[in-house]
Length: 338
Image (cartoon, rainbow, N blue to C red; front, top):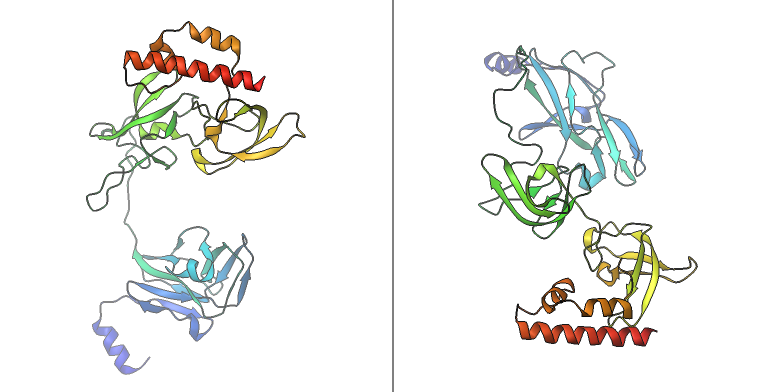
């Protein structure tokens, strides 16, 4: 160290760290708030592989500091690696000749890291002083809610709401009460000062209920034309547009694209044809028959239109005509099929 450097340091309040490096390329470089660190060896990783990439530096941090090591912002995009433990914490006593700093890398694709490539950055962080713990039987403050319970707002935009697993909820999606099979369509999402983010849904077996968002789980299973969830192994029917054809099938594959994902079905017997279809083209209901039509024909117009989801705008005359037209359509479809 030159005389001018010694004089400058004597006048500066900056603390000093003692380092040992493998090569000049491993000397920390200050860029903004952090010091960049480089790989000290050529490394190759296959997709899904985890390796420790040595950073070629040992360091005795100043008294009262620990080191915080994170990836550079471009590391994943350029080199296809993530830091497997998300962040590295360097304890102050990790400072011997063999205590080489490393980057625990997880490869998202096949990649090669050349020696001298800056992949990490670190900063010294002052350590917190002593902390005493007062053990109590009950906390003195009210619950705020779990993960994601405060929602999200950006530039005055609409808040976002998340289930207990951090998946986004929206009006019209399906959710179920955690730990139960009770499912419902989300009707409303709003913030409550007392309880945090709230979901209002009509849950099966419970009716309309308000639950905290962290008490429900998004139900992403695809649903048939009646809103019934579809799962692998279900016996399901494929019905043509006019109801004139019905194919008895079993569910082979349910895509993971959420409620709108395609469903692969295979016609029974198991060696029959198979195809990918939209959930709205499938039903768990038994196929229509003359017996079912006869039973439905004695229903009131209002009940019939409601149960068969006929849009009639509560007009009595329209309900009568809609019921008659729908029964005629069903008779013709069953006759054509038989």
